[in-house]
Structure formats: C-alpha cells, structure tokens
Amino acid sequence: MFERAEPGPRKAHKRRLMACALDAFEAGGIAATTVEDIRARAGSSIGSIYHHFGNKDGLVAALFFAAIDDETALCESHISAATTPREIIEAIVRGYIEWVAAQPRLARFLYMARSSVAAGPAASELARRNKVRYGLLFDWLDKGVAAGTVRALPRETYVPLMIGPAETYCRAWLSERVKTSPAQHVAIFTEAAWRAVAL
Image 1: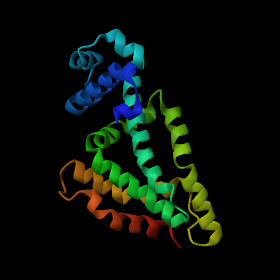
Image 2: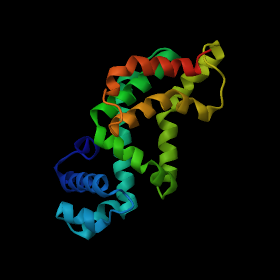
Image 3: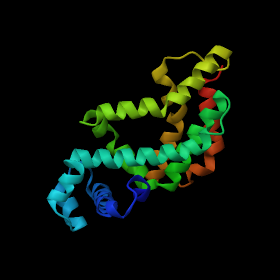
C-alpha cells in the first residue's frame, strides 16, 4: 500500500517513515506515541519526519488518507461496472469488506485514527475527500429516489445505513471477537445494505 501511495525510489524514506509510524501507533496507540518513538523505529532524524509530514498530526493524516485512497481504489474496481443504484451500493460494500479483509492492520488504524483526523487540522481535507468519494453514490441514490426504488432519506444517513452492519462485523473480526473473515459474508452484508435503503 505504501508503494502505491508514495511510488518511486525517491519516496522510499517517506514510505519507511509511514510504515514505522503504523507499527508505533499499533503498538502504543496514537495519543501515547511520540515523534521520537517513530524516529527511533525508523532510524531517522526528527527533521526528516517534520520535513515530510510537518508534525505527528500530519503523519497520522498522511497514513489515514493513504489507507482511504487504497480502499477507494479497490472499491472503484467494482463501482466501474455498476449500472443501477443497487449495484453501486453492493460494489461499495463489497469493496469495503474486501479491503478490510486484505489490509487488517490498516483497517485497525483507520478506526483508531478517524476521530483524531476528523477533529484535527486535516478535517477539511477529510470532508473534501468524502464528498468526492461518495459523489457517484449519491448521484445513483438520487436516480433511485426519482425512479421509486430508493427511499428518500436524510442524505447523511445513507452511508451509515449501508456500511454500518459490515463495519460492526469488521471491527469484531479485527478485534478477534468473531473468527470468520468478513469476506466470507459479503453476500449477507451487500443484501443488508440494499434492504436498508430500498423501497
């Protein structure tokens, strides 16, 4: 994922810093991890971290957005074939589940970091990315409402209704409260997502 997010030999050190930061956040949590902890793991300098990311908040945001972009890229491989509201809903949920199953460490980090990114300096960038990320979905939902196949709901409720059950299961799997991979239940969660918003 880091190679996809920051490609090329010139970005090798930046990728290493991101990978070491992920290790550090996973081991100690975001709040307790210091820039020095990350520097020590990477065998780098404090100045290099600040050069690439500005500060710890910038590094958290960079990791968060790289993970989101990676998930989005996987979803888009399914979305590109969608031709109806139901198909795009199923594509988004399927892509989300498949990504979590393939990238469990990054998925744990997303859940860990979401609130701090949403409340931090990168909040406006997160809002912008979410608008772009879900723009096509809302276009299709609007078509479904007009065609009488999708319920007219407050806009902010659609994504939680669609993703909520799958996310709850994914969190349980990542914390080992359930053992079966969410990838084995894709059909159940895509059907639930459609039923949550369909007329």
